[in-house]
Image 1 (tube, each protein chain N blue to C red):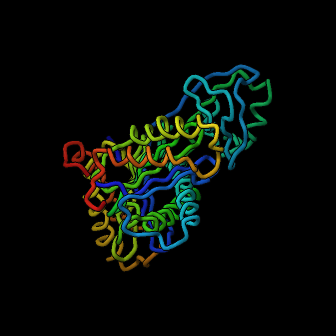
Image 2: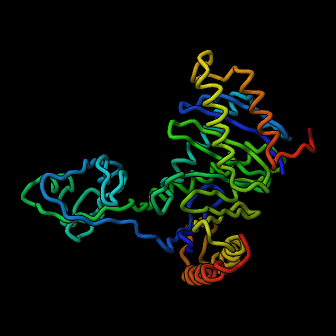
Image 3: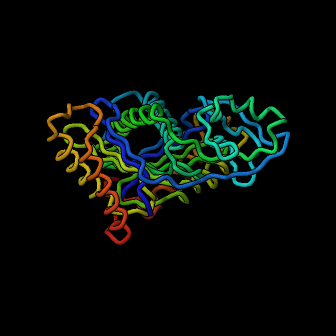
Length: 219
Length: 145
């Protein structure tokens, strides 16, 4: 049971707030000798596994750390290119940690506006009159819940498929937004939310919802 | 409970089959355009979901719902996509969509030498069997004919 992350999207499709509250660890660390029996390739400034799925390392996983030092995109901690570093037999044996690539802030912006358009298309393709956009999207690893206010702001929560009580959480987040972002005289509308009280109260609401959701009524 | 409509796409985005039962609103665009829009939306949702997911996925995207309808999605490893729109009261229907693929599409279209693959299905047998199968579903209500 968990709430993975929260997104707030303004009426133009721009991401104005994002919080990752819990990220399940799907990582595998292994020591390799030369030559590396995985095929790595560069994709979107990251080094991804292209072939050679084994021991919990899956195709599409990224290189996260080499010898315990986190890599920075396609560069190692001391600024060398990862692919070049791993191509040199002198650096072996080497221990590499693989895992699902984490989203960069650019990707989060892109995904938020992508959801904004999917939401609109979902309502256009409706077979019934007067449908809203996507309110809940279900996959085998998470459920995405979305609440759009009358003023067009969308609150999106990603949670475990078994987590309940998300509908009331979304309304609670709206309340927190109205109280601590809108009523803040230094907050300008449609702009990224940087309010300490909003942060604090949102985190509190997520904790409460995670605990309550285990027994609460279905969302 | 009711079934609104059903789309069948192949992996290139060609709409192999479309049928509707209780559909109260049309998209307001020509059917060809609607199929493209639907396929495009599903394609984007698939990539959206695979990026958003905190863990590695097996089946991927299963369904979404709005305030008025629920879209169920099933994709085979060969890229055939079965999409059914129902009302909100219908639970997971992966087995139904799988049945449409394995017992109807594979049996009556793939195994039929007169049905060229990758084009709209012309087979009358497939149409009528699909229609009677959907009408026999427990969540298909006959209230609007």
